[in-house]
Length: 203
Image (cartoon, rainbow, N blue to C red; front, side, top):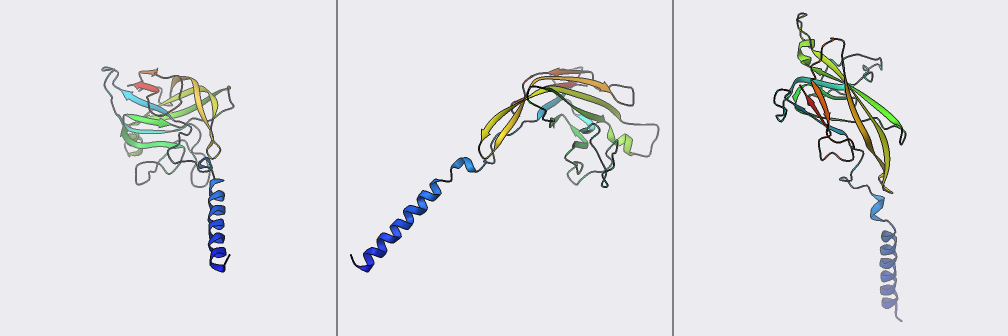
């Protein structure tokens, strides 16, 4: 066998070795961008007098109760600033001072099978709190979501996701002693994706 043939077989051997090493990296090693992860609770707002009609909440602000802090880490009761896109610069605030007929609420992931609660402040007419007129103010209600977490294996790269079972939602009045939420309907008690509405709020 001459030198050229030896060289040729050496290149083929290297190519086969490279192909085998790439084959060892399974598709499972990368978590695809579209892979389903832990879902949020999808909430829609409806007109209490026309229950089939969506109705935006004016100047709505939504945030996790007791979870806000300022830039120094000190706790604050109410958000007072916004980012350019209208959402507070905090993962703990879902919306700030905008008109919306739907929201997506991230739930606290608890121990599997144990009842866990997540509480959110829903403030209507946030602009009235922010203005200089002391005769007008916003209206704040608190919703409490209770549920149990269930862990589901997704893949080696993505790990586990949580779904939520036995969803229940209740409303409490805020400091203003006045409800703006008339009624709450849990449409889906299992939260396993974001393709459907889980909760309807009437106001």
